[in-house]
Image 1 (cartoon, rainbow, N blue to C red):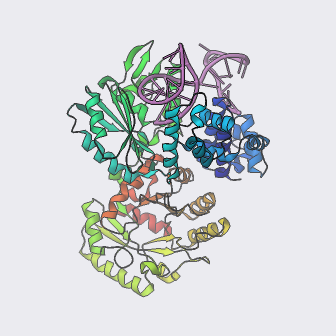
Image 2 (cartoon, rainbow, N blue to C red; image 1 turned 135 degrees about the vertical axis):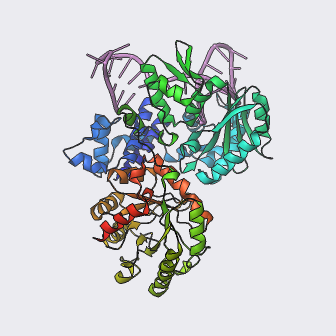
Image 3 (cartoon, chains in turn red, yellow; image 1 turned 60 degrees about the vertical axis):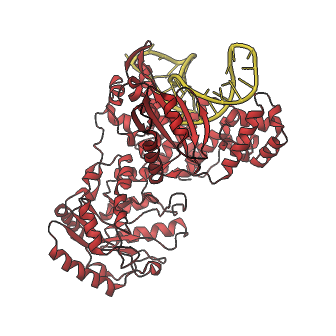
Amino acid sequence: MNNAQIAETFDLIGDLLEFTGANPFRVRAYRNAARTVRDLSEPVAELISGDGRKLTDIPGIGEDLAQKITVLAQGGELPLLAELRAAVPESVLALLRIPGLGPKKAAALHKELGINSLDDLRRACQQHRVRELKGFGEKTEQAILAGLDFASQAQVRMLWAEADLYAQSIMQHLRRARSIEQMEAAGSYRRGRDTVGDLDILVVSAKPAEVMDALADFERGAAVLARGETKMSIRLNCGLQVDLRVVPAESFGAALQYFTGSKEHNVELRSRAKARGLKINEYGVFRDDQYIAGRTEEEVYAALGLPWFPPELREARHEFEWADAGALPQLVSVDDIQGDLHMHTSESDGSATIEEMVAAAQRRGLKYLAITDHSKRVTMANGLNAARLRRQWAHIDKLNATLRGFTVLKGVEVDILERGGLDLEDDVLAEADWVVASLHYGQNQPRDQITRRIVDALRHPAVCAIGHPTGRLINRRKPYEVDLDAVFKAAKEHGKCLELNANPERLDLDDVACAAAKAHGIPIVISTDAHSEHGLDAMKFGVDQARRAGLTRHDVANTRTFAQFQKLLAARRS
DNA sequence: GCCGTTTTCGGCCCGACTGTTTTCAGTCG
């Protein structure tokens, strides 16, 4: 098993254990281990065989879990998992996806009524058998029925870029409530995750009811899920849940910190507070019920002897160890980006001309760009053959002669062919300033084959970077089977870049893979893959993921000036 | 199941809201 499969197995064990009413901290241990293994920058197999770092050196992995990881990595099976599977049919885990149903209630339904699936559950509700159970009632039964309808819809997290549109329009709507003094969207939205599960909006107001009325009024047909004194939840027609919290001004920083999360980051923070004899909640930091801090996030972290963390880092991955070492990275920002190295024009499947893309890039403060239209294999996109490409490059030469303080690189997005090899002759590719190699066809090939195609492309002297290295389309297409670790090693060996594709539907390398690439010392290029002038605005989405991966300006190749970049390219040629 | 210059055993983050209760358990974030 590889890291991802081991992580999945531990998550499953966690779910099954929870269902059987196991010690919640034991459940957490498995879930933490799943996260840890998933985020590792190297295959666990290397930690088992190597004489360097051991599995038990990793925080959260003790003797028992290390042994289980070893068994799984070597293709063995876990007796614990077999036992759990015998006790709990895996199909009942679907019950946990129903809003309002947790492990206790789901287990009761399974045990008392023999419910094994969502279909069983619907029948039991319709026959009013659920309301007879202790701890259940008529309202619970109706809530489950409503939840079943919701759970049967495709349950997907929203793209960050789409959630951003909702966040902005909701906050604009809420500002009608005159009593709002401060407002901010928190949660995974603020942490810049590639997808967002729900929106958390935090407000300071002396009149909470006025703000809640405004939220209720945002959209006709939205369902109010809960409404109390300080907290309200609604579900929009699109399925997005919006949680509103109203807090006093002296608690705004504490609440913002708390509702930004992540949950794991907060758990660590609270345990550190406790070690200092402090208590921290969404209202502030307290010593013996005496308020110490809470107006701003900086104040809250400072009270615990910690620096303010950029929200993108708050995943309890490495931020605390960095802070303890006084080495929190200075994260890359959109302003650091000097050039964009992947985009298309109307010559292939883009909508704008080279001149239009150049003007759009200049308006956005960029100093250079690479035109990387598709190669001929991508017939659907009107990909270019050698003759058309050379004509385009001649045109770029002329254009460059007219530009001041801006450079257009002669590039191409060359296809990595199904049988291996590249879609253009070596002599053509050698004339390019910048070559992105990407895989668009044969995405269902087995892992070995895909990996070999990409590794071979990295070995080709003309190739500068691999475009969208996993090929995922969020919520639409899984990443192809590829051994990223082998790709990292090849990129490192041949001195090549890997792309972080900023298209909000792609965003691959994702944050975890990007951090692993950084650990291998591979320069990352963040590129928009723009197919229009507007597409250049996607840079922000890519930068957010790079920030989540802990990348600084030095880790990102296209933060360099063109002169520095030329040196990089020259080094590549020599 | 993990972890430890306050502990090798006994902890493990904290509060709002709901529904089913009659003082609180379960769920959620």
